[in-house]
Amino acid sequence: MLIINGVLRSEEVGGGTEWGDPSPVTISGGVISVLGPGWYEVDTEASAVSDDLDTINGLQKGDEIMLSIANNGRVVVLKNGTGNISIGVDTTLNATTDRMRLQYDGVNLVEASSRP
Image (cartoon, rainbow, N blue to C red; front, top):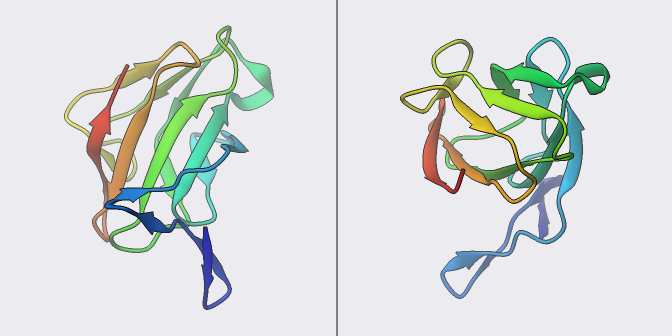
């Protein structure tokens, strides 16, 4: 990871991204706020069994993030077209081994790759 202009950034290593350890984030009102590129472990609001994720804030054009869930007992649904997530269809992360890689295009987050 690098700090550029006071912002934590992922560092490109050998053509890939060095993700490091995941940073915990919790959904609040359908939104998470991140600190730039990186791997984020998403938890539901108030430890609900399921929660919708509509919007992700804190990114600049070209930033990539990896999402996973914090707990196998708490499902996160990435909602397509509700906020700034544009991935074609709603996508459910229901196991801690599920991953969704997204890139911010300056307006929306689009799917870079996934493994649900």
